[in-house]
Every structure is written in C-alpha cells, then in structure tokens.
Image 1 (spheres, helix red, strand yellow):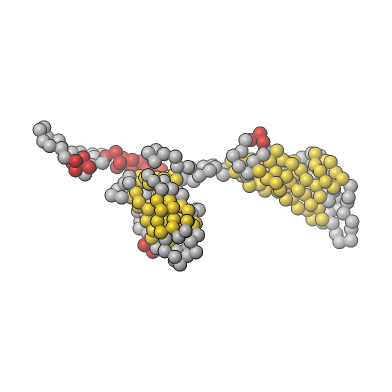
Image 2 (image 1 turned 120 degrees about the vertical axis):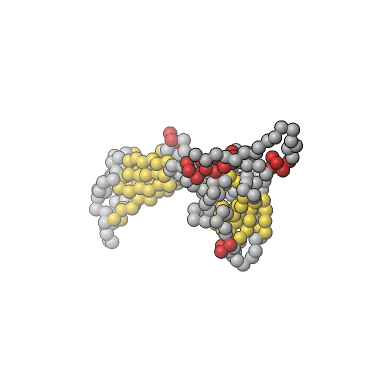
Length: 251
C-alpha cells in the first residue's frame, strides 16, 4: 500500500502561503486515480463547445479530464485568433496539473500527449468538433429505440398505387425528432413490379409512411381509393441522448 506524502508541521513554526500552495495534493491525486482506474477514459466531460467567429474561435466554459486522470476546468468563455489558410487543432491544456486550464491553438503535429482535443479548424475557418476530432470522456448515453408495426388493414389514405399511414409517437414524449427506417413486413398485394416506403413529415410527435407501388409500363396504375393498408409495414425509430451540457464550473 502506498501512502500520500504530507507536510510535517512543527509546533511554533511559521506556515507561509507557499507551504499551503506547493504542498502535496492528495485529494487531486485520489481523484485522478479514480478517473484512470474506475472509468478508464479521458476527454471532454461537459461544455467546451467550439465555434468560429470572424477569424477567431470561441470556446465555452467547461471541464475535461486529461490522459493522467487530472481534472481541468475552463471557468470562462475564451476567444483566440486562428491562423488563416492552415488547419489547426483547438485543445484544452491543464495549467500546473490543474484544475485551472487554458485553451491552446496548435498545428496537428504539435498536439501534446496531455492535451484534450476540442475541435479542428480547417483552412477555410470551418469547425469540426464531432466524433473523430473531439475526445469525449463518455458517450452521450444510450440511444432510445422504438419499433412498431402498421398491420394490414390499418387506416390509411390514398389510392392502391400510392397510400400513406400516420404513426403517432406522442405517448412517448420524445425530446426531438427520431431517425426512422421502415419497410414492408409482408409481401405487398397487387400486380406491382416494385414498391417503396418513404418516411415523411417526421417530428417528435410522429411520422408518415408513404408507400408507392410501381407497375409495368403500359399498365394503368389503380386509381381506386383505399382506406385500409393492403400490406403491413414495420418501422424502427432511434433517438440518441443529448450530449452532457455544462452548467456550473464548480461541478
């Protein structure tokens, strides 16, 4: 077992400011070991969003963990100029082991091992901060998955060659519009040579499945209106959780 070093105080001795400032930091070391051993991850924890503005980058307040497990906090919004005509990397660098941290602009070959990448600014001034250029301590959370079936005979609107069905998601109280994929759950009826299913008008409350059935050239498409689905449709909706948002620099 290892023991944290501690200051040896002597009765009657003076305690100066640098004795407290430069002394051992067991709490920070234990937190760093916790990040490395328990979570085995590093990167942006919250906030630290990057946006471009008139030849400068603006980094919002936030916090991150470096490769050594040390915690860094950017307490205020920081704006820095970026060179034109070349690609650079915006990183967060801890100051003297943290928790104070600074924003640095580096060339890709100059990024240091303990830097936390926040975004890449290309030669045209565009900011890329998604997965692959920004290091996250964790993923945004589990994706919410919804699935269902529009059975054959369900209420629809249209004609035999083009009809649509509305899927209601209001009961799920989603935070945003999900990504939806859909297809036929059974073989479509009729003389169609091919059929397609398109997802339209999607929002947090639901979406529309529009079906088109194509017939051979020279064959008139059926014009009779239909009010019941001639085929069953299956759908899958995915809504990822939001990235963690930064609220308080002291969290």
